[in-house]
Every structure is written in structure tokens, then in C-alpha cells.
Image (cartoon, rainbow, N blue to C red; front, top):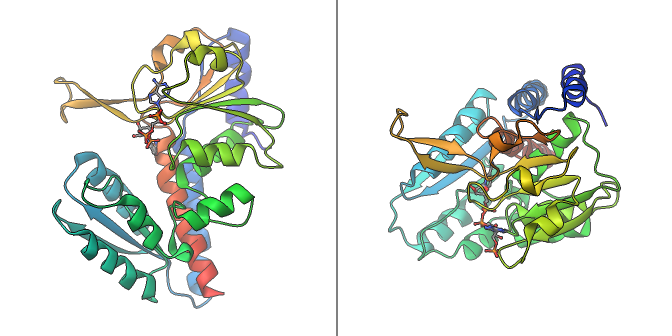
Length: 309
Ligand code: NAP
């Protein structure tokens, strides 16, 4: 596993001073985007059409609109083609399914992403299952989930893929380590567990959820904790042993009248409680969120490459 000179230095200083190590992700995401930009230029020079991504957004949820905007900005910065389909909250499921069928057929679309969550009257599973596995760049379809579990070639869901990249960047090994995942969603917890238990990754994995009676019983023995619960303060320093790494996936909007937007972002871990601990932790913002967008671009490039073969 590679560890950059800068991150190695931060790690050594943190160990000597016994202070928290911040695992910032922006530089990791930027490096991924830069590498993708070069690959895309080469891909186009070789006579291929630029990779293309179709994004479907239903309703006007502020967080979803922000995520979709960030994905569009990243696609444009890379020179990808980008198609956006925006619908009002009351659009029918049939209309969305018919759009997905069209996008599946279109030659100028490599990747399809439906921004979740969808309104209650639309079945998320029916919509995701309708996306062709070859264009399922989010990696949520049953075909891709099954392939991931079986250790076969597939589109790896973007957030877990980004987490693996961050662990690798910071030289945090997984082989023989105890990993505890808090959260069992189809988009984070379950695929994360599938990746960490693969041969070659070799972590011993425990998945916790709301019916886990005592989280500390598991987290205190963990080398790596991935928290994706969707609640601020799900864990603090009392849940984590010295030397462990915490990957905070949570993105929570906390009302804050002093901010221009009226809120601030917080993760699921109480970041400031770790200040005097020998613990490595990803921040929010500036953490896993930026990796998710970069990995979506990486999957879109991969989809274009596969379709061009
Ligand atoms: P989700 O579908 O709501 O799932 C949350 C999971 O956490 C559930 O399995 C739930 O258990 C478990 N959980 C909730 N509170 C818990 C607690 N106190 N103790 C133990 N387990 C608990 O959420 P998600 O879609 O996975 O997202 C989780 C968080 O990550 C959200 O804040 C989301 O915004 C964020 N997220 C960030 C990114 C990114 O790019 N950074 C990407 C995706 C998601 P049960 O199954 O028992 O209900």
C-alpha cells in the first residue's frame, strides 16, 4: 500500500504528539480527478466519444439538488457529456421507468444515475432494477450487488470505493484488521462489508445497526470504524480505541443561524471529541463526500471504456 510523503509525515507527528490525525480527502479526490482528466483526454484522442453520464433528479430536496450539482460540475470539469433530467415530486413511476428504458437504449449514454431518495410513491428498487447493469455507475442494481458479493468484476458503489481509496492513500492496511461498520444500508454499509471481507482485502468485518444492543462492545475492539448511521454524535471518543481509524460517512445538516445557508454540516462522529486522542479520522465536510463524486466519475469513465471495446 502506498502512503504519500505528506501523509506519512502527518502520521509520524501525530504518533509522537499523540494527537488526532485528520484524514482529509480533498487532495485524494483532486488527484483522482486529475488522473481521470488525463485518461479522458487520451480516450478521446484515440477517437472515442467523451464519456457521458445521465442524471435523474426527482423533486426539490435541497441536499439532493446540491449532490446533483456537484456531480454535474465534476462531469463538466472532466469534459464528460452530461444529461440531466429533473422532474417535479409528483412525477409517476411509469414516467421514470420509461425514461430509464430510453437511456438504457441510447448509444450516447454510458452511465445512468438516479439520485436517491425518491418520493414514497416511486419504488426505488423497481427504478434501480430497471437500469441496465452495464450503465449502472452507482453499482446499486441487483446484478452489480451480486457480482460485488461474489468478488466478480462490477461497478463498485461510489462511497465504499472512495473509502477504500482513502484507506489506501493514508496507508491504513485492512488485511487481518478488525473493521466495524455502523449502518447496513444497500448503498454504504452492505457494499462496504462485501468489499472489506473480499480475499485480498482480508478484514474481519462486523456490521452494526439499530438493533445492536451495545455499539461499544464492537467498536472498542476495532482497528477501523466506518460510521454511516445518518445521525450526528452516533459515536464519540469513548467508542474508539487508541490507534484506530474512523471513517465518517455521515452528512447531517445542523441548523445554524450564523451561517449564510442557515445550516452547517456534521458527520456521524463527534469530531472534536477526538482532538487529544491517537485516532485517525475523516472530517465532514472535506471527507468521504468528495470521494463519492470522484468515484462516480471513475465508474462513468469505466462504463465508457467498456462500451467502447
Ligand atoms: P440509511 O439508509 O438511513 O441507513 C442508516 C443505517 O444506520 C441503518 O442501517 C441503521 O440501522 C443504522 N443506524 C442508524 N442509527 C444507528 C445507531 N444509533 N446505531 C447503530 N446503527 C444505526 O443511511 P445511508 O444512506 O447509509 O447513509 C448514512 C449516512 O451517510 C447519511 O448521513 C448519509 O447522508 C450519508 N451518506 C454520505 C455519503 C457520502 O458521500 N459522504 C454517501 C451516502 C450516504 P437500521 O438498519 O437498524 O435502521
